[in-house]
Amino acid sequence: MTCDVQLKERAGVINPIFTCQPAGAQFASIGIKDCIGIVHGGQGCVMFVRLWFSQHFKDNFLLASSSVHEDGAVFGALDRVETAVDVLLMRYPGVKVVPIITTCSTEVIGDDVDGVINKLNRGLLQEKYADREVHLVAIHSPSFVGSHVTGYDVAVESFVTYFAKKGVPNGKLNLITGWVNPGDVTALKHLLAEMQVDSTVLFEIESFDSPIMPDKSGESHGSTTIEDLTGTANAIGTIALNRYEGGKAAKYLEAEFDIPTIIGPTPIGIRNTDTFLQNVKKLTGKPIPESLVRERGIAIDALTDLTHMFLADKKVAIYGHPDLVIGLAEFCLDLEMEPVLLLLGDDNSSYKNDPRIKALESNVDYDMKIVLNADLMELESRIKNKEVELDLILGHSKGRFVSIDNNVPMVRVGFPTYDRAGLYRHPVVGYAGAIWLAEEMANTLFTDMEYKKNKEWILNMW
Ligand code: SF4
Image (cartoon, rainbow, N blue to C red; front, side, top):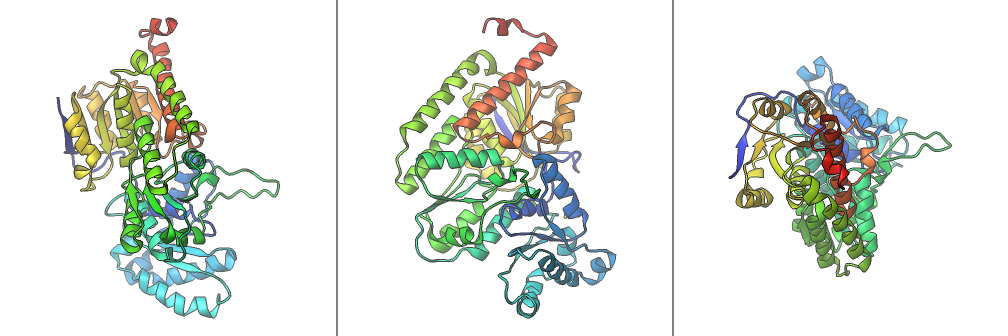
């Protein structure tokens, strides 16, 4: 009866769970208003990432490429950055923030992106765009280390480091959400509004669920402003919900501007949402109102209806972003389920010392495996070899064929979830998220029961 943390033994990656760092930097960039990122690399480093975002959100996001070709890979491609910045500013008069996002190729050839930004600031921007506010922000995201999770973390830190500036205290709470969905932002803002807390949400991506307006505007973008980013240095506190997606920026604000900071927990499930609200209370002094106690009660009632009868003892595999996977595992444990296999798609050395993983190692009373640097082949082979017997899989849509081919029901959660409608609209955080997740898991198991005619009588007694 142990919880065992191990590295995937097989060399190479087959059907990866994660993609590369620049993708995460691009996700952070689209959260900022009046911002278009330039990815300094081949066109595919943008094209496939834009497609990935569009598949998930069913919306269109603007990102640009410096379009490096063979000659640039040999002789250096900084001239492509200069041209890209000029063309972008000409074509988009409203753009103010232009992150220059590096990739594997341009980091390997050693292009000096910080140097070219200095050159553009002293040259092009003064000569041709002197009447415009333009910020060029270097984001170093070589794809041969880390993953899109690391890239997101690095990008959030880069934006905060560039913009945060000490000024007059603004009385706001910085809320760094991590890589979430618009539905999560709505749920988090609701909790803060009930507590009457004024906040700066990084990044404010509720607007990714964008309307089609009469003027036919069809592009989605986040609504975090330059002023929001600047004001993070003047907040009363920072809460970063995810350790690996925004934790670096929170630590920077604490070290540089003495902003009291709390990192985690990811507010998935009742216990972690309770802790989140207590943390908000601690940093702001605002009480938790009766309305949220009532919401909590409704959630507990919904979970009680499902836990013992239907969810207890169900064996689950979970893969995806580390904070999400750990948060889901903690929630499953609270629902009396048994998360038996957790798969994290990179080998971040911090995982082994993560207090939440340490707590699982100390407290789990059945066999649980946590596999680092894992891929979807690892999940599939463990199912096929009968190393693990599963009732349910929780993960993003890239693992759908593991579920389909092996006849294990699956709840789509995380990013991307392109094979189910509208999931970006549903929160997994807060009390609302706890209800949605538990009911989604239960309904998925009920449907599976119908097809497999397995213990369907239980439903008839309900
Ligand atoms: S691995 Fe390198 S070449 Fe491929 S998309 Fe990522 S940054 Fe671009």
